[in-house]
Image 1: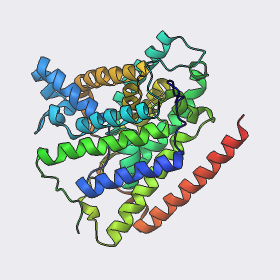
Image 2: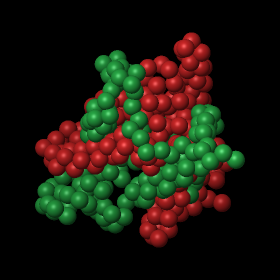
Image 3: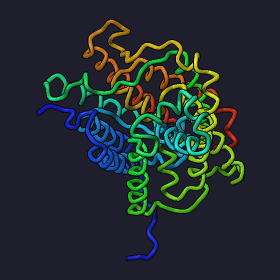
Image 4: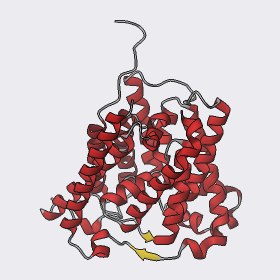
Length: 173
Length: 192
């Protein structure tokens, strides 16, 4: 056996997608709720802001929601995302795919890549607040439950990404 | 058997460990699909890699069909599932902002966690942007609360909107997904 393993190829997307669908179905059957992600960031931000400026936190429609029992630090989605990090970290390590790196195209410096990553995160947070969820909670979970708003979000988010992609071509090729 | 197995009012000692277990499986599926890689993910928007569409739609269809048939056989109380509420105009604006952020970051909130957990620093910066953004947007939101709560429709589903049976909409989504898969395969074959 060689000491350095080449990273294994990714799984077939339809197989990985069907497995993800079974995970979502298991969440529905087990707990009556689906997957999500952006809510974990909203609740964590709520906990931080409430610790520094409790009055301002209570005045925000977003923070007020996460300040309800059991409080921002016991949010279901935060525990789910902790699981995502454990599961994906182990999966990548087993497949020889975990590596410390700044993933970027040749046409962009690491500093610009990290700037775009941060700005993208800020934009997605604003989008997820107004949309009441992200790709996991709206597009996937709400989509599977045939919610009108979820399909609207899915269509508009994809259309906006396609419309902006030509302007960002240098960052990705 | 009658699902959901754990009620909404169950104790945190029951729901939080379940969240961790579901999350681990969620993370494994995303990592195996390759969606922790920003370059692979944005390939969707440059027509060179349709993994996002294939994974998202096959997951959506499997879960949708599972919910439909388990409900039809009486094994799952579909009415007990939490359906996200619809706010038409805020969700339109939110979708535009989210899509712009998605192609800039190359990752969504869930896949950014996968990216960060597998050693990618760019994923860590997306997480920092999400946290900082949530704090800033949350503080500013009181000024936009009328817009934030506008065009509310509650839990509103496609069958209700279109006046069709649930089965007809489920069948239409399956056909839509199959067409999208076929178009994706055709595009990928044409790309170098």
